[in-house]
Length: 430
Image (cartoon, rainbow, N blue to C red; front, side, top):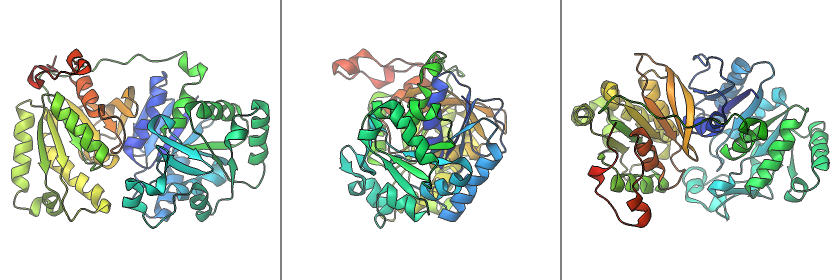
C-alpha cells in the first residue's frame, strides 16, 4: 500500500503515520510539501492549519493533496479524535477530487468512541469535556452538523450495519459511494468495529478516502499483508553525554500528569518559562537570562524538561506564538541536544522549523501515539532522535517512556513493585 496522510498538526501526523512505520512500511512525516520524502511508501504532511480560518485551511489542505498525491496512492485525512480544528472544511475541499469521505474519528483504545454520529470521550458526550469547552464552547460537537455546515451531504453507518454481513456491508458502501452522499459517518465503539471498516474499505474499488484519527489508521496498517513485514524497534544510538530535551508546550491536565511522573522517576532538571517572557520575546528584560539558563543546562549534558508556564492571561489562541518563541530560546543551544521529546503539535513543529528539520523518517512507536524518528535532512546536518506526542494524549507514563528510550534505559522493576528508587541512579547514558 502507498498512502498520503494529510494532518493539521505535527504530532497528529506522526501519531497517525507511526502505525505504518511499525508495520514495516517506509514512512516519512514532513512539514512542507517541498521537503525531501525520498521513496517512502507512506508520506504524512503537517499542513499546520488548525488555527487558520476555514477557507485558508481548506486551500492549504487541497494544495497539499494536489502537490503530493502520486498515481495509485490512497488518501487518509487525519483528524483529531475530539474534532478540534477545521477538519470539516478540509474534508469538503478534498471530497470532490478524492471521492466518498469515510468519516470515523473513533479511537477506542484512548476512550474515544462514536455512537449515533456523536463522539463520546470515556462514555461522556464530547461537548461536556473541558477540551471542547476550552476551544469550542460556542459550537456543536456533532459530526453531521459540522460536515453539513461545510456543505457536505451525509449519511450514517450504524453499528448494526457495520457488524452485520460483510458482503451486505461492502455492497452498502458501494451504493452510498455511487449516490449523492459525500460523507459517510461511521459509528464505532471498539477496535473490532474499526477492524471491520478497515478490511471492507481497503478492498473497495469505489473512489473513497478515509477521515479518521490514529484509531482507524492503526487498523488499516495492521491488516495481515502489513503484519508480515512488521519492523523491529531500533535502538537509539546517540553521542555519549548528549542530553535529552523534553519540550512541553501543552498545558493540558494529561501533560501535567506526564511531567509529574517524568520528574519523579527520571534524572532530569526542570525549567518553566513564564508566558510573560515569551509574549514579549527578546524585548523582555529576562529573555537573555532564560536563554543563558537553558544553554548552561544543555552544555553540562543535563537532561532538561523545559515547559511553558501558565498565568491568568492565558489564551489557547496564543499557543503557536508561545511555542515559536520557546523554540527561539532553545535554538542557539540545540547543537548540544542528543534527543528531543516534544509534546504538543505546535511545540514540535516550532522547534523543528527553528532548527531547519523539515521531515522525519519514522522508525518506531514507544507507546500508543508516541512516535520516534530521525530527521531526513537538516540545515546543519545535525540529526538527533526526535519523539513527538500530542499534548492531551497518552498515559501518565508516556513522557517517562520516551525519556527511557532516549537514554537506552530499562524501567526499574522497583516501580512495578511499588517502591521508588533514587532517580539519580536511573537511565545512565550509554
